[in-house]
Length: 514
Image (cartoon, rainbow, N blue to C red):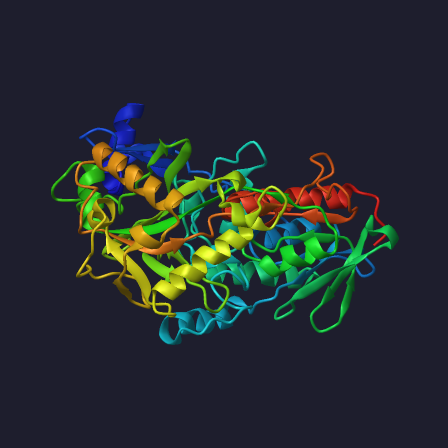
């Protein structure tokens, strides 16, 4: 009923007690699906007009971006992911010229580099699923659901995306997404706004160091790998995979803090099976319902085990940013119409969980080194290739070989591998117990028609770059604004965008000489 306009209008008219002919307009303002019971409900909120035109006011008013005047102060934004893009746009609102430095390529050229990872096993260390215009979010479904509502306006962020070409549906849906096929055009439009308003965006421009004042108490700019210097306060929005940036900061004496991460696998089911489970119907989702999602969480031996970045109707992709490593991630097109469903299934890890050889009590980079080693093991177990190791789900839980594998969406291919033997025991054992718990919660979820593919490690930054919560500046280095997922303060497109805006606001209110 909610999907057919005529039927929706009939319900609205009945609720208002008027004839359908008197309705001059109906506009859905909120939509969600409640599948907790056997009778699936679609909940909608609407605006309706009777005997007069429906107001055409946008759900979120667009931002008026004006050209930054000549001679305006400038600031450096390192990284062109969600945090960097939204920081740059907010700087323009403050009359500050953003200079965006992105190590990767623009979003169109980047597509060829991500394709080569699957086709040829070649990883460009500066242009891949993690680096390049749009950041890691450009190729991870464009999921826009966040719980970070206390940090800033989610609606304002979504409105800016709509202003740059995203569907207005993201302002309506409870769990909005754009889709990896449509998000690149939105990202490109945002970059065009930055440039039209006087900002600069430089691709293939990797930041190699900070320009620090005497005593390293303030940042004066950055130096790039080609030796150029860029002057101004710095918003550092490099994403959660920029390990060379963490090493550079550590070598420069910039304070860093260890941080927990989550490590596990990608779990892939047939989408029809997930539809059957979630919608309580052997026929699946039918004609009108979207591809079903799920969310699971449990505790095993004092650590969380949970689903992460669930991609209904999606595919699994090779997400490494370095050669000789193997990492997987998930994405979905806007229609979410593939035959597969996938999700990260990960285990919460704290620095104190690491084996003694990592010396996590003294080495702030220990969690990053552990991440690297797990990814290297996955690559080696895959025969030193991007053809990922995989195991049927129930075989993984029962600790036995999978002699065959179901067809997978993973474009580089999968091969049988005993993940239960080579995953770190603290991860593998908890995953098995977690899968058993999820199977009890959802009948049919535990099945050998599903496959686990390893490894998923890039769930968040392995470090936090500490900042003063009042000024958003680094606790020791004035003019340095650690931002977004890479700094340990966000977890997704929307929360990263909000953090970028907050850092830009803080920079604009500070008394720096640009």
